[in-house]
Image (spheres, rainbow, N blue to C red):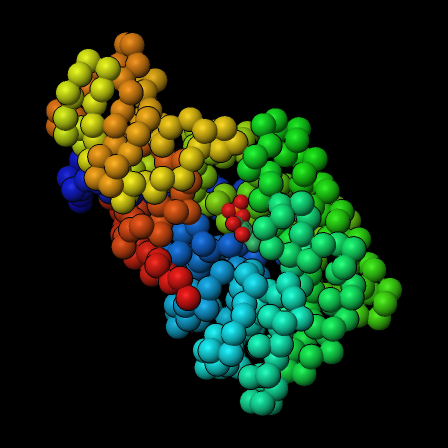
Length: 363
Ligand SMILES: Cc1ncc(COP(=O)(O)O)c(C=O)c1O
């Protein structure tokens, strides 16, 4: 039996009790809202956690990249949606190679992008399902709602493709400073997408999936009439940004990073062995505020270099060299992507080790 204290640092820990509660709560929330849950596995990239989500009723997984789909398909997952504008004949050929036992869909936000997939699937006499991405205000990717019907019609006509639905992601919620603003963004996310789906159905398109989702907005967007599916990802672990946004309490954060104090060069400064290689440089959202909270203290990481996490020591806190600390990261998803494994822990004991099998799959 290995104790947390025996792990070399830095180490990414996942509290299994918290993870299980987070998984169950969101599964129940989707069930009671009457929508399908298709969690975005970008947050964990772990096959075993994906299986736990399916066991709790998820219809399948969302992922972003073809390389991630390859990992989860090889592990036996049968229903995958790439919630990302998937473009290129080479990618289409890799998707084709995943075989037809897998129910597969990809995102598209242009006729040009979808055409690159259409040609390959048509030639192979196979059909790829597509969801049109609609911009509900994040202004990253996605068709503007006013242009959605026209693009949807054209995508639906492309040979080798079947337009299965529409999807959106209200990432702008991460910049909302009040929980009431997050709730409003969630409602509008659902309403914009449901309205687009209605318009398409009225025009004769067979829209099945109306898929919303982010962790801050999920509870609000999934209750909007007409929404059929929700794709939160971060809820499995949560992080300091979700706490700051009001999505969860610190007790609902499953992922922490164990680190060791390696230097205390001044009374107001300590340095731990976790820098940007461990935590990433992602800022705290919605408002910047350092690079991770040191749990049980008032101090936080104020600066990172690759291997150094510089703590601004607050009055009343004291750190000594060799001391182990527990960091709540700003953004759990990017931490996963930086590590080969995470340790599943319960009551201070390492119960299991998960390979982050789909980390680093950028293509
Ligand atoms: C398209 C898409 N869907 C769903 C999600 C999941 O959102 P969250 O991480 O807030 O749960 C993301 C996250 O970036 C996303 O980009």
